[in-house]
Each structure stands twice: as structure tokens, then as C-alpha cells.
Image (cartoon, rainbow, N blue to C red):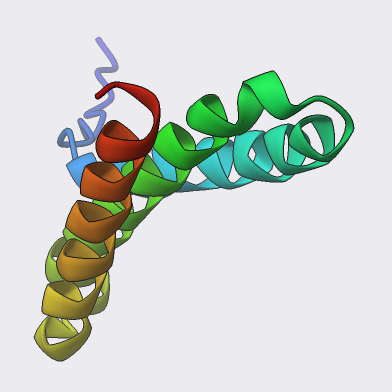
Length: 90
């Protein structure tokens, strides 16, 4: 009887973080173009920019191991989030 041992890959969230960052970057480019044509999509664009910043901060810690840029991405993400909320919600 021949049996073959198969290696099982472990789940890694590194690839998921990079995939989310790539998808959000493409969405950011698409909504930047749409927002230039119609002003009602600017809040969606800013929300995507905020998500990209937080995803980049996460990927810097988990994948790139560059902790000094993580705080910059978090600060920019919080700044964009607060200015968007102040401009479009309140």
C-alpha cells in the first residue's frame, strides 16, 4: 500500500492583508476618477483612503516589519477619518 504524505499549509493572514490592500488601492483609484466627475462620491473616496491607511499600518507590522511608518499611517488615517466626518456628517 502506497501512502503519500501531503504537507498542509498553515493559514497566514499576511497574504490576506496584502490582498485587501491591493483591492482597496484599486478601489481608491477608481473612486478618485469617479469623484472628479461627480462630487457626491468624495466621502466614499475618503473612506477608502482611511481604510487603505489602516491596512498599510497593519501590513507594516505583520509583513514588512517596519514599525516606524506604522504610526505615520495611523495618524494620517485618523486625520482623514476625522476631517471626513466633520465635513460630511456634522
